[in-house]
Image 1 (cartoon, rainbow, N blue to C red):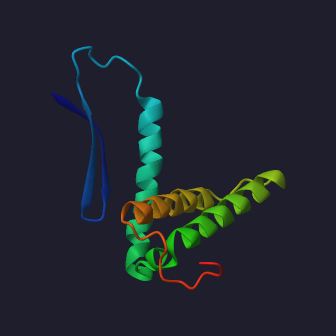
Image 2 (cartoon, one colour):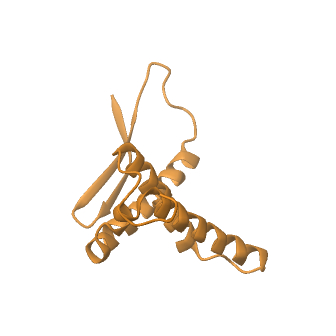
Image 3 (cartoon, rainbow, N blue to C red):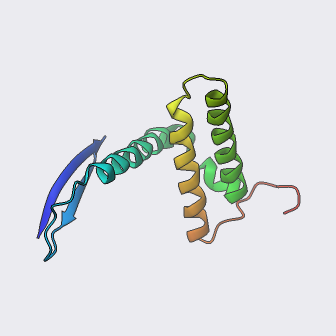
Length: 120
């Protein structure tokens, strides 16, 4: 038995978050998990929205490119926090996506990419 917890629509894509009821039942507060899932779906929304504009540049840059961009986004957010400013949420969303890109490249066996990285 499943129970629908959330529905997210991104263009023509509908994402349903369901929970599978087990014999113990689900009495726990799932708010923290649902909040986390919502942030991941927001990051996915950005990828879907931008993929038509940018294609798959991330794939060609390989894991090194994704890691470099991840580091740049994290460093930018950290600098804003250390300067006492409110960090731009886009830096965190982009960091999530660059981490996901790196994981996808490794899973697909395409970690190297095709950019001529020094020392590759």
